[in-house]
Image 1 (tube, rainbow, N blue to C red):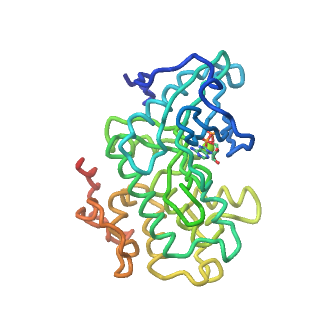
Image 2: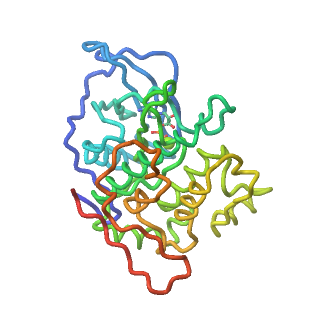
Image 3: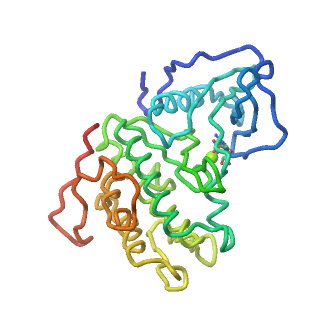
Length: 311
Ligand code: ADP
Ligand code: MG
């Protein structure tokens, strides 16, 4: 069931109403928090396995948000086969909250390592592997007509930090299902979503931040930063990209194009030579057989790229 806003509210997971604490032991430390949720580590009593419990308030600013939470659950369910989306284990409901029991991504937000000092910061080789995983995960969501709409370093987690593990995409609170990728493109172009960076653009931003530890759009003040974002004005100065390969910069430029319809799809981005260099021994993904988008930005003759066929 999908309403006209792309929200899906029919879920398959049984919502448990027995107390969550009879099956899980909460561990003190918070794993993180966002606008409406607190996430805490917990142990499932029967298995001894670690999980992350995301506590979502049903009422926010006096409004009933249960449907939004059901949508988040439905999207997680539909992404069960996606290796880079956090797994949903169970759901509990109390008078005031819905609690999602999620796979614990113990490595935390990639954000932390993006801004870390040299010896803990990502190497370019790390970023190549993580960018491939993010693109593969997002391409897989798009194949299922799901858009995340909130891809940022706080919503991309790691299964482990040391040694560096794999990525897990979390926080499907703003996600929507679209009838087709074409419709996704149309909706992303509407003023409603101006403040939400379209997917491939946001992956470009993520890659930029992972490589440089800086935001590509940061201006001297809020106004300037906002202008840089809305005009996709990216800082490509030597300073920012010290020690970063020119292929990496070219990859970012491919993603951070000003004209939305000229941007490559997530699946196409996986073909970029930066992610497929001779030193890159990581598994080739099925998306690599898709045509690459190597037209110059000024090209008049571009055709709208097709959505990748489901594999
Ligand atoms: P919100 O919708 O409020 O932003 P998120 O789902 O993004 O909630 O969770 C908030 C924060 O909690 C994340 O940025 C992350 O730091 C942490 N977190 C969320 N899910 C997990 C998880 N499965 N494992 C570990 N930490 C998590
Ligand atoms: Mg979040």
